[in-house]
Length: 470
Ligand code: GLN
Image 1: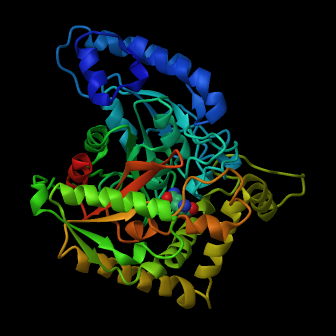
Image 2: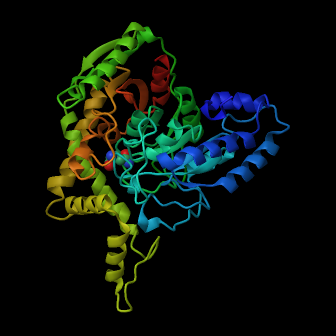
Image 3: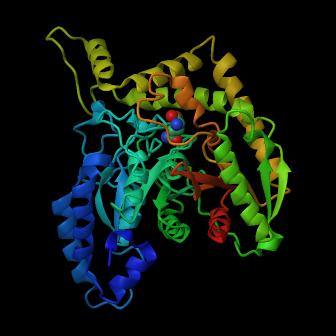
């Protein structure tokens, strides 16, 4: 039996029946990583010793138990912008290359309560800024379906790790698409929860009004298991809320799903369009009512996002000054404080991060604030209103995740605008704080294509159930 191919639910069943031990399970995963990650580079760090020790400990813990939580002993991987106490946390940046997390993120505390096994930390675009995982200071991750192509970003390492059977599930973060895009490109399931559904305490901040942590898994059911383990209010993150799980029971024939016409315009790969429309037809054949809807402010969402996200990033990244965190660059004895700031940041940040800091600082500067940042906030309100209006009529929305297939490594890296355009279908969801699932629904030229299922705030259960229908 190939243990690394199993879902969480099946692994749990196997552990309960004592068909294999957690130690055997972890050894199989570690073997797989050792053999295949040289080609893929999903991980920045793998903790073999720690994993084996934890596995043995957890085997002992459950040796006499008949019942234990679903995630006990399940091997997972964590994006390297989420703090795991005692492990390095680099955000794939040179500026944090020697930084060790002094505490656990709340999501990690929650997973550890269920005794998951953390195999290691996964690669990302530096500070989660990017769509391809090429902006990592430690080299790109490769798509397991075609290693000459990108896995999507910024949580490319986490998505690739699940797709390559390096772990049973992983965690990523999504500010403008960073869970959904790599899930789509790697052919796995990814959930971006509602803003506030999952605590962000211990997540290295990129854009605080947009960031959310969420799971990658092999099935919708597995995604749901992980989401339920990490959700809920946390006193350490004042933006988190305790949400009631709304009744998600429905009959397919009572379900109304909207398809926004603004998402099927010039620029989308015709074969992706066909694959998405075929998936929608399948839903229709199951009895789901499909209707065309309009989200008129869609075309403003991308420019709006690329003002708001860099503005917040420029403020959040001010803390990396060479004094408090990470590397410190003191070039000479006569360096003054400003020199240290400039030399550290100039050397520690990569090109994309510097670009975002400059864009954000510019948009927030006096004289330009009203024209850019304030205007973007007003546009954001219009984007939110578009969704509110549509959700009075429909239960969910279907769109593609990406207008293009996983592209070649190097293809877009010199052209930031073409890289930003990849996020055209995902950023509005973050602006509006909504939950959305990326579901693999087919392949084009051997490469996976994801359907995006967007839900009302806190209706994760419903979009997960809709995903399961497929
Ligand atoms: N690709 C988007 C960006 O570069 C989104 C990143 C993310 O969701 N972290 O900002």
